[in-house]
Length: 114
Length: 113
Image 1: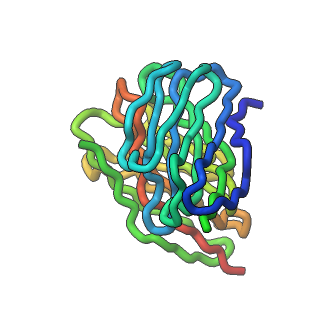
Image 2 (image 1 turned 90 degrees about the vertical axis):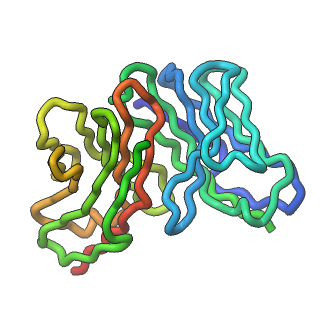
């Protein structure tokens, strides 16, 4: 079964800490995405990548960075965690092409910053 | 620019009743349309998709959706709700040739016994 795996289901971090969220996919997908999900706001795109070492800002990139050194792995980095970054973080991947395949999502990481 | 509007952040139905979740989109080019389902504390799972073949699309768990270009709608239906259908549902649009998907705000479905 194809999978997108997020390394942690739950994380609690302190304000000011540097936080790494890891995502690995085993489908050889070119595209990978990081979203955050908050009640009433739906999914908001933070960053995406369409190739190794390539990255593009999404709608809310402030306070975040990403790394994609290998095709299967896409990391989200919170440079200095703040309480307003408490959220559910979802990683997704998709194949390149005409856009009709849809996304495969990981199970999410619920991050709490205290 | 693309956008997706889901009418109703919460929908409540009785077990056995019809489920109707509404989605309207805007897109300047022919779209691909998707419905995803999210169960508590899980990621999103693809329920069904419209990719310009048949306008009535059948998905998993008895759900289906109809693409109506004249109404720019892609409503999700299920004839008879089951308790296990309680979840949050997201409508999404991608334009042909693209890979970025725009998601609606989601509709939480409650099923009463």
